[in-house]
Amino acid sequence: MLANIALPLLGLIDTAIIGHLGGTQDLAALAIGAIVINFIFWNFGFLRMSTTALSAQAWGQGQALSLLRIGLRALIIASALALCILCLQKPLTLLAMTLLAPPLEALEGASTYLAIRLWGAPITLINYVITGLLIGLSRSKSILVLQITLNSLNAVFDLLLAGVLGLGITGIAYGTVIAEVITVFIGFYILHLTWRQLVSNNPSLHSVSLLSTCWQQLRESQFWVSVHFKKILRSNRDIWIRTFCLLLSFMGFTHFSGQLGANTLAANHLLLQIIAFSAFFLDSFAYVTEADTGKAIGQRSRRLFIQATQKTSVLAAITAIALAGIILVSGPWVINQLTVTSRINTLAIEHLYLCAIYIALSAGAFQLDGIFIGANYGKALRNASITSALLFFILWLSFLHIYGLIGLWIAFISFIVLRALCLSVYWPNLLSTHFSTNKR
Image (cartoon, rainbow, N blue to C red; front, side):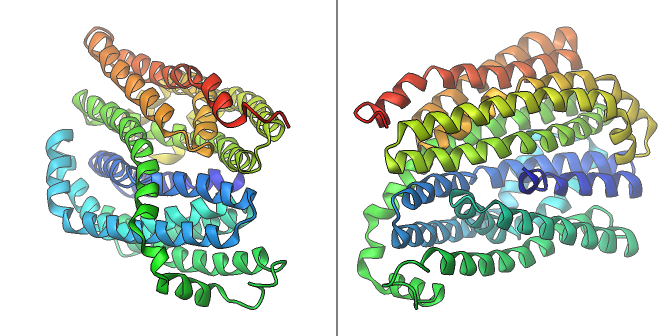
């Protein structure tokens, strides 16, 4: 949980620093730049999710070399995809600015932020693979170390570049990229230590280092057989569609907020930062569920599967309600710490209750996501996300022009509920597929 809630602190730190050092236009530019970066990078979130599912199942089967091959192939795919992003930097930036149509005062800052952050694509995607491996192996303490390191470095470089050197939103972007680069090297070192622990009880691998074992695998022709890569890509396809639909909905929320003015865009960005913090907090239960679900499927144990899903789901639901209550009480203070612009603060605080409702109702979607990701059941994730995203835009068309900002939030809240309802339809099929002949 501590490891997971550290992740959205990147966004909170960036928002707080620019909220105090910049003006409304800077905060609006960060809102646009951040949602586009999230949209682009999290389209490749399947690298983390599929790596978690496959590594957890390999771990459950006790196959250390299979686990290593999964990680290597995922890193190769991540590097290839990052190269594509680098080649398409300018078209991606132009397309994003055209589609989102940010207020003119935020356009230059958002474009600058994007141009810098996109150069960090290789590091970001590799970080997804490292995180996926550690989650699949239930190495929560290692993830916590990485996230604390990343956030600490990000805060230091942001303050240095944006504050001391006065680079503004440009400094925020550079600070995040530098922090991610350092963190990836630390992540590889943690994987090296983890490998030594995994093979300590395996006589055939005990004296073999991670680097030499990786080199040995890369030299084998069997490693490069296309069918292995195609298998990973096929499993990633449905998860990618799922992620694309989710991000499209969040991007739509930001776009529609911008149509209501720069102040509304900035205020909703503040509320989205609170949602991101709470969502990653809740997603920590889903991460545990992913690992335990994959492990249970690897062991063909229905008992372990039911135990993991039931206990984490109850805790997630209780936590979601508690978080909503905390946000209602302490939310105004948090918002006032993020920016000193009174107009934005007032607007965000007025709609804080809608943010709390969203969080209270989100546990079901996160838990079911974790279960189906751990089971590598991409079809259900794909179909549920497509359906809920389509309904979100239909609701937006119905409510926004009648109820304005509140109508937008009603559609957004409905989106998270619909995700859970659509996924629950596939629950019986999930059980029958993996545990129909095994009642352990």
